Length: 172
Image (tube, rainbow, N blue to C red; front, side, top):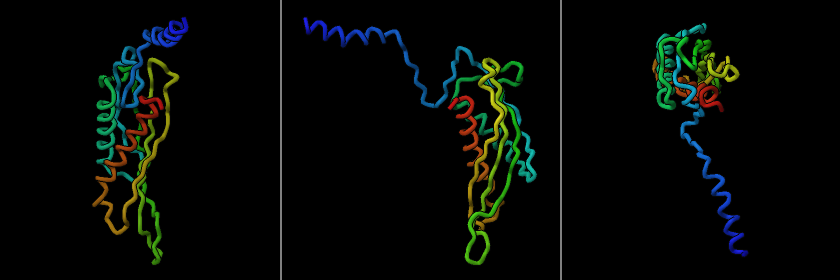
């Protein structure tokens, strides 16, 4: 009798849970693909005081690549046909001295990029956000910005894409 009761206590939770089917994703996205099928990613014009023209294309490509790699959403060309829309502008591109050497000159410089993002969830407007994101990289002041600018912009764009994804599509 005790053996049957013990067996019942062990097996009962398994039978109750057999109807549940957990879904795990390894990219951090919690999108329900029965609801969300399309996304529109707008251009991100540069509105910063200091302008580096290749940054716009670098950033836009990184956002599109990140969405493509991390979701099953189809990218559409019209925001009116999209379940989700991401738009915004590059609002900051700045250099600032960080470390000062014994000769009172900066030994490191920080490049900071700020992006304002408007995320519109047309299926559930409470998920929509309008927020700014910033990321930076430091480099030796002995280097010319023109020598490291492309690499730094790529690295910063990758970090910004991750931050934006986690705050919007990843819903962290």
